Image (tube, rainbow, N blue to C red; front, side):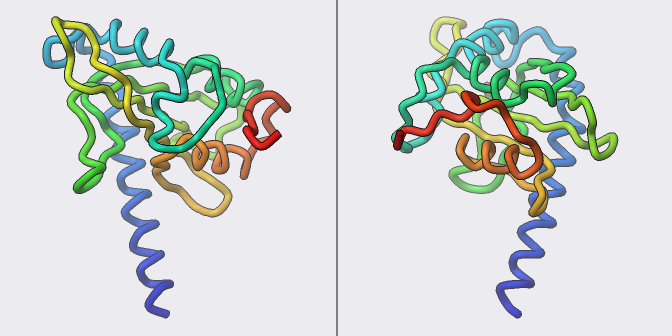
Length: 178
């Protein structure tokens, strides 16, 4: 019983965080810089970042960029993918406090479950150097999944949430065990 209550609280917190992130996504698109870094530069750095850079201590063999990975994963389920930049939105306490520099990709689904059904990923960056984005170092993702809504700290968890609802094409998820 205790676990069930804690799980419901965690799910409620994750759902609230997800809704807040979606609400905050629009204002970030109107700014041209974030703490001294051009938002366009953050977006380009996120799109071209190797997914290995954001896999946070996981051994992954994927040589694609974040943009290539997300485009392959979203496939026909995406009407469009809109990239923005600004402070990180998918954050929490402690180690999950985020960074002042993030790029976000919001996926507009072809057949959403509702108006707030818009998967979102973020790439976190270290502090900039000479006005250029720092190194990408972390991933966060949020979406409505079959088993509930939530924020993913790992790309593999976001892939699992995605595949709980959609059947991506065969090459969308790279399995290093093969």
